[in-house]
Image (cartoon, rainbow, N blue to C red; front, side, top):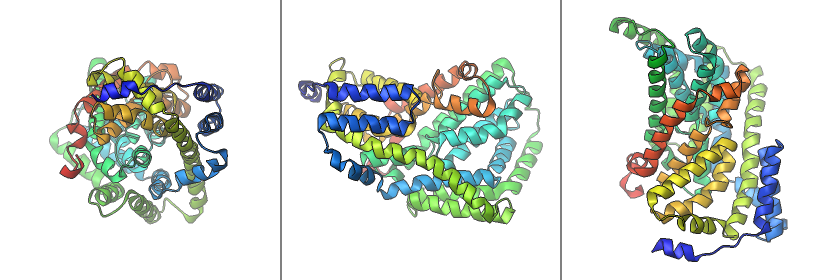
Length: 443
């Protein structure tokens, strides 16, 4: 049996592993930037273990980010920034509101939908939380939602930033594990939409219980008229996600080419609407460069760390240790999901992917989990971690733009975490959810 063979592989970890890990935890506790914390741990581990000559660290750093697929990351970030500055993001909100205004809790549902729309372009949950939060939270409060709940709703909806393709997270995990990002984008459609629907259902249930928001008193004719007016006023905004989805899913464009095309189309629309001027370019580029400047150093330093862990046999040792506890595939899947949610609570997506994916994938392989299913499950579980109290990243993002206490927001996210966790478990236990849209040769 594969489990028996794995259990025979004993890996003894010493101070060359534990001391760098302690350095990483200490630096994170001291609020040292993640890239510096990862870098310090990587260099310490390489020095102490001799896994990689220190003279090759610089070359390893640049080789790690010298990948064509990563070019898509700054392009999607820039697209999201231009989308906000051009005012196109408000067109999404208007259409979403017109689409859901027939039901009770319509604006809350519209907020979730616009989170999904924005996420499908920017590929970033933090960017979605900030952009959508600024547009909707005050209006949600005016509609009758308590401010902490309104913040929790936006934080949960913004989780779709890493779950609905195209997503920066899938580009990075594809790079780390050697899987096509386009394939992951196709596989993530159903799981991403399932998470979005779960958040919508949660809000509708909570709204029914507590009657936060009224509405829903509208005839079919009025609803159709409002929707047609909103679409007529902002249909061109949907050219951007339309081009991205058609280009990637038809195979005509790579994610990088789709990102570049989206930037050009968004800029053209901004110029036509006269909401963007050439003088705005420096600010847009600087803003996007700052976000990209956070992501790429993390990837650069995380890859040598992942190499050192692999050379030291940490993934194999982890599989051996966990499989010695149980051989039940369902229990091992639950363990992986639990680890990923906990990791998503305390650390950003990028370092989690680069460090955790090579460690957990051998465990997924040992129970026969498809690599595509593993990737989708991993990103979804990390997404749940973004709003899991007390340290979910999105909770802090929304708190930062509203001034609302993180603890007050965290007290309202429980139902969203519960329903999102159900979807995550379904993805982990039923491979068809992740693989059904793939061609037969990739399943």
